[in-house]
Length: 87
Image 1: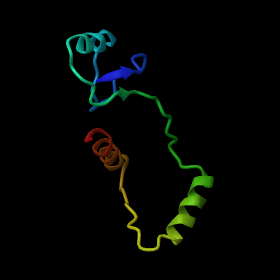
Image 2: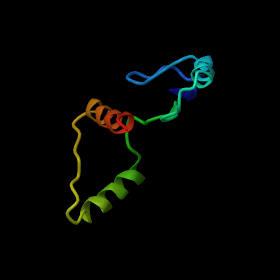
Image 3: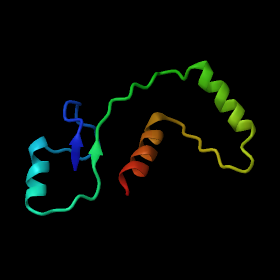
């Protein structure tokens, strides 16, 4: 249940509710499983050179780690949503 971030726009594929619903649910004896919070994080269109250099350094030292490649932002978003909301 969303407990913070009501001032931010609703995010696609996420839970949303009105602020007063949190109190109602608690009052009727339901237990909390997890708090959901909405934050706005700006994402630049182009990755800054600083981060590209770090990425190249990590990629060179992968030592058996599997590097995930995403062909577009949709694939990245789907991966993040699946990891974030399937607790």
